[in-house]
Length: 395
Image (cartoon, rainbow, N blue to C red; front, side):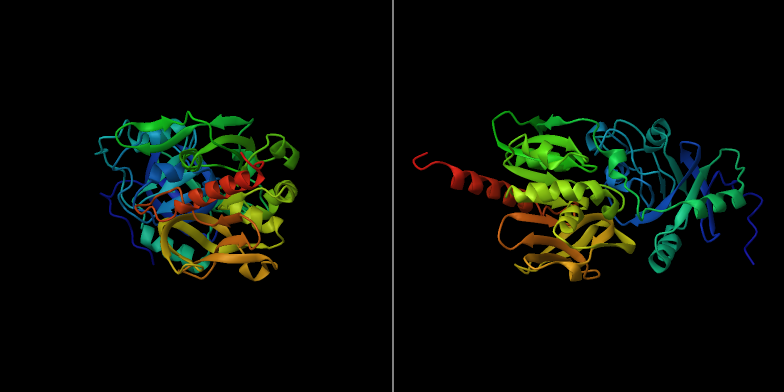
């Protein structure tokens, strides 16, 4: 029998209702109202603002296993896209006032302004164990300052959520039109600098691209033109790129693949260097003939060990994905290059005969270590090598 709350206990102002009927009560912050989504957990100790603005979290509410969320405030420099994309957040302790020299605002005010719901005071360890054991649940998250909730209706809404399988979300988070990107990685003390000199011409297909990926490409020597997710091979090749980048993004890769795979196949026929990250990795795998599958609870965090099979090196990486490439489905000529040391799932592939490769994790995220930046340099070197090989003799 559940314990009766103390008469002196504060009245709950938010609740999280799971499709199985489980309800978590807590303290609401940010926007008021309701939202329905898939629930995942993230184990990162830093970067909550980057997580909330990562387009890969479309259709998801994020449970943070680290209790200190909100302690460094928010600032415009850390946004991965213009607006938050994650539907809401679940935290152990209510956000405190920020204590960081870079802060220009408070998390709770930022969430309210951006229309995103937060709930604090939740037993996030219990919730995370439930996600690990039962898979990512469908949930309804509600915030009402009066504490009035129709629990039966919220559970029904959670049960009615269609889920992410078969859902193409890249179209919802991609750019509306093409644009150029020249901002480079943040560096002390200048901050973000602009790339001014000519460079390698890269077309980045935006399935939900994080800004820091584009910065890393610019810092690696690339002139970046970003195209929407629905861009065709003809759109890409019309720009005469030296290489093509496939970005991260949300949703079911098989659904996005309906239009993305034909475009990628057309690019591959042009024999250009190709580099993919996260959803871009999954898109490349589908274009090469492999399959993707939904994971039980996915990989979301900044502390995931990934082994480079070819060198034996272990990288500490940042991850965010709920689908994975089935390594057993990789066709001849495609080599598995990286695997997760948590569960052995695929984390990287490459073609054996040309510079076409991708990784499941986020080499741009620098979750403390910067183990994976070499991938951007590898992409740039492949483009330079191709240009050198094509240059007329004597030039």
